Image (cartoon, rainbow, N blue to C red; front, side, top):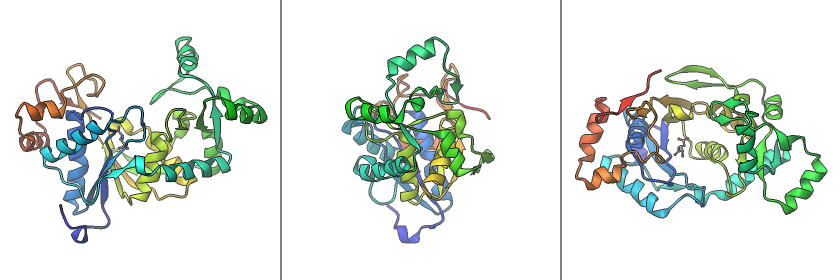
Length: 296
Ligand code: GLU
């Protein structure tokens, strides 16, 4: 571990995996990009475990993540951060947005939305179908009565939020200056029915809390940044710089994913592959057969 007193305070980067599966090569690449970004600038590299989804997070995946990163030779500063220990700060942020009149309860089930999607009634956004705003138009008194008795999530009223924030921009060190267009993702869920907080809210609160200066992550999260930028404005949080990197693709041109059972790092590790050699190859842009880097 490096002593944090010797480090450049202007660069604080994090790797923020969710422990809901085993890490694969795509994660090794993402962890390396964040780690090397910090180290090349003499900055700090933090590890934050995004274990907010109690239904999907597993302690054995946390153990595997730590072992995989050590095997790859990536070191982080200070204690590992766990989002599950910070639920109060997410609840406080959600309450603040509620008090601003920017969240509304949503009673739609996944099945309701799936049906609408099958009927072709949902517009496509960069992150999947856009919520049609069904519950936004409920009578507030009726909605509040239902809140007491029915499972519900809380959605961000993006139109109203943008009305308050005004136009927003953010800077990506790879893609250049961006105009934030959170409307393209629609009224995202910030407090899900079945877990205490959604990714967008937790990550925004934590990047500020951890003093992250540069968010280095994959292009798959590029579109989400518009929502994070909006939340920063609403919650008066600082805006970091961003660097969205290319993704590793499989032989069919799709990004590697946990659900598609792409070769996990723990399997490579137990097969006797050298983590240092793997990192060396990834740094040289040498990928295993069938794996390539996305363009653009
Ligand atoms: N926890 C997120 C994931 O595993 C990444 C969060 C981020 O880098 O913003 O996909």
